Image (tube, rainbow, N blue to C red; front, side, top):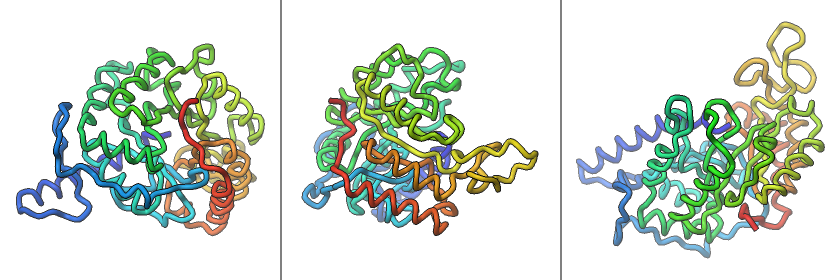
Length: 344
């Protein structure tokens, strides 16, 4: 669910780094520019980049709610109202900028420190722990350690994604829940207070169901119509039961762009039938309708430590009926106690 939007972010990141390099040559300090480089994996102390967050200014309430990919570096693509949170790619170069920007907007973040395409973390079609660890090592900076600890403390950071949809074939066959627990322990060796989690697709809750997570804090489970023909209650019961067995806090998500009723029946792919809100990103998928978003979102939100949607799309978000559905979910989320995506 995550890889599709990280490629665009990578392109934006390259442009941002080029601007920072140009500023360094000219002696300027461009607005929104974070550290052009935080060096290698060795700690740096006494940096001028050490953040001084105003924790009192960032108190949050309610269940966090919003889409994937709401941010482009330090700029919001929308609102942020009615959204209060989002799930975004991060890098060692951009993380400080994103934390400070989110805090200034009173927005909460699920970050993906090891996001990006599977090719970054695979060798010969198999997940490669050494490659994953190498990326994670870029965060071993004192400025980042302080910033993350402060952002977890004040609620700006909800958690960090370890890996996206480990159940899918693109990761090969070596991944297990114990291996992902090793990844969780490694992140916690750098950021001890940071909740860490995984994302699972609609049927992914049943992946390696005989195994158990013991270090992972949360799992985001994403719903689409096809997995239970629209029976959100049955799917919710199944994922909550698996989350309980794994000891993880459930994050929940709707695949708003590809999770409506699929269009397979009449030979014309137009997503104009019942339960279809418009063309999805690929055949035979369709957008969720406003009614589906509202009804399914209201059914899931009270059970979630974070309520997400895949993914930000300006056209979809601008639809008045969809916006009303988001507002209904946001109102319910705001009425609930603030949860933590942290293992008990």
